[in-house]
Image 1: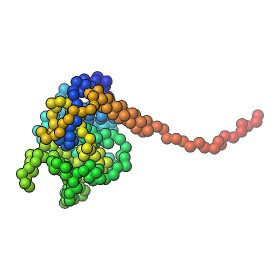
Image 2: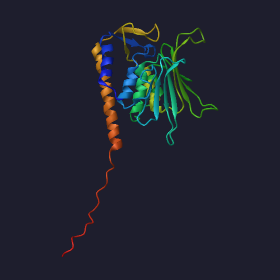
Image 3: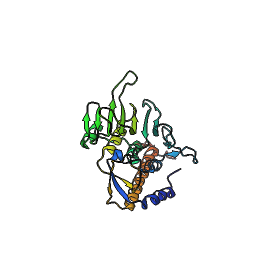
Length: 272
């Protein structure tokens, strides 16, 4: 079913009464509203294929190649799972994200999935330009709580996979308890990885309502200059853009091929 005005109104009703607080850094901002992800995919033409009375949400892409599962009752640490089936010479891939991954960061990943792959710089350029520390095995946030790791090849994998973890401060060489994780397997398209890491390391704060859950008590929150309606308007504007983008893509797919004009070969009518 397409995203309805009633569903958008429910999002607006919640956020219109919340006093927004600028919350940073992003890796500690907390989960936010999952509808940043689900509304975006629905606007792009994805359909719900799960039981409407279940807490679990499963969305499938129009071509049925991609499937997103959101399970807030999961017994594992992965609440979000995204799978892509192999097509022709393109391999399948898998990505998962923990409960406290900010929805806006995950939405950058799913938005990039619904759009044509853009020309983007490599993910490390985005990370280091945001002030993260580049290390031999990856990068670390300025507060050292979030670590991005590109794990090397092994006898089981012919390409590197991405592992991102946010942890509480540890003691010496021992890391603290994990706050959230993300895993992008070795076949995850590069532009999706770049979109996720760019959104994660963006220095701009995310908006969270007063008393809304954050990822850690050390997250910094300040009253936002944005009014609640501006937060709602930004969401609606993004949804309209994704809808228009999806309509344009469908028109391109259904547009008949242009047949070049040929010189006329008609013969003059025979005289009687």
